[in-house]
Image (cartoon, rainbow, N blue to C red; front, side):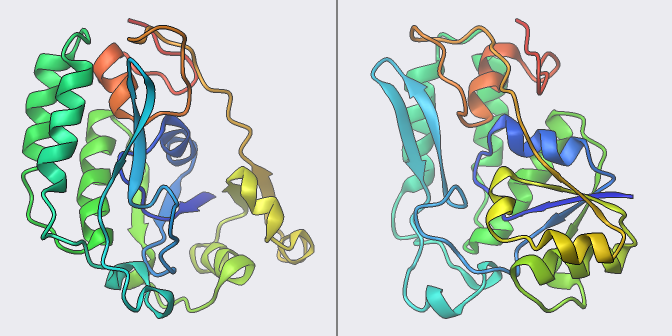
Length: 228
């Protein structure tokens, strides 16, 4: 069995979905700690001036001792309307804007106040849009209590996985010898981003899923090749 895992992410990039699609099982790591200035609560879209961050405001008090399932959104700020307005302003000329934006408005009409729950609901939406059938499990419902390399190793053991797909940054903390001893092979994702038709000049990679979704349409997105 091939397993991959990642923290929740807001409007993830193509590489996030590539890692899910290549696995038999994906673990949604909502039991880990919130990381400030990460892609958990923000991502980028493209504008005529370059990349623009869309950030979900998060209540920061106590976040250093809390997990993502405890992280709360600052709902006093009208971030949903602001994000929709920014997307509409910058993608209204995209080929698939009309159909996609209507669905995005529905997605953004939720009332979630918990960050991990919001990202979970959105992940389910994107997996359906991209027709990814990989089984997805939330780590917060599993009887696995560990951190960093031990967490990943225990998740692999729990599900009987013999191959783990890690992000490139996994080299910084995974103890490869422990995986070899457990009979689990490690693969570090070496993602080559596809080039596809894009608005606003020179191609800019590693943007939110919103960019290829609006420009290519959900039926034409390829994680390593995207055509109009």
